[in-house]
Length: 229
Image (cartoon, rainbow, N blue to C red; front, top):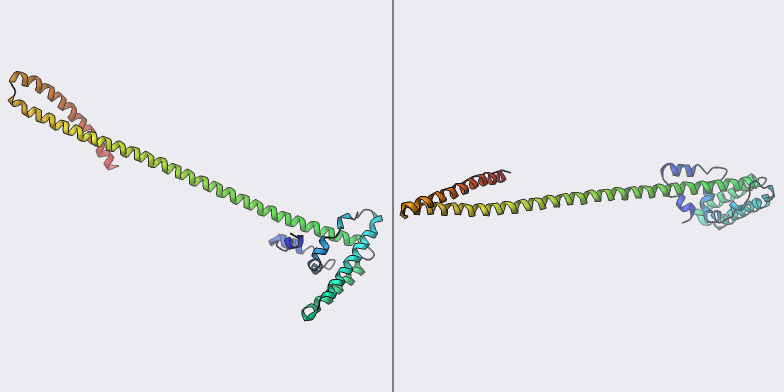
């Protein structure tokens, strides 16, 4: 992309700095209407510290004046009338201002182009930095979301494990409760058993019932706590 097109896209302070490069010494209209021509000229080939290259600088000045005059002649119609006069005036102005010091014109244009390039580069770097920072922020947010999902998954898995454990305990509680009822039924049926045999079996069943009832009482308390939670 041509430097002038990029320079026109500058904003804020950078745009003000770019505009400040221009004035009577080099009108911004000349930069605008001769943008492509200016950027295609070998300004950097002129060694400003070598007086022997003044002829090269003079040649560039004459070329600029000629290009302005050509551009002015191309303007037509009512809309182009004022621009034709203005560009012709600038051609005369450059001729009278820099004819005796063409190095100053080259120095001026080199400074303008270098400054524009710096401002555009700084704006590009700032934009890239903002983009990278936004990507970093997005990446961090993505990691936070992934971490939150992982914590939720683990919590859900833990809850499922606890639920399965509770269901297992409830099923075993029912089995033991039924076992206690069976023991109670067996104790009741001992009334028809001879005394000697009844005493021995009753002692065994009473001991077994005490163990089961103790377990049921303890497990019932635990299950009640789960229900409250």
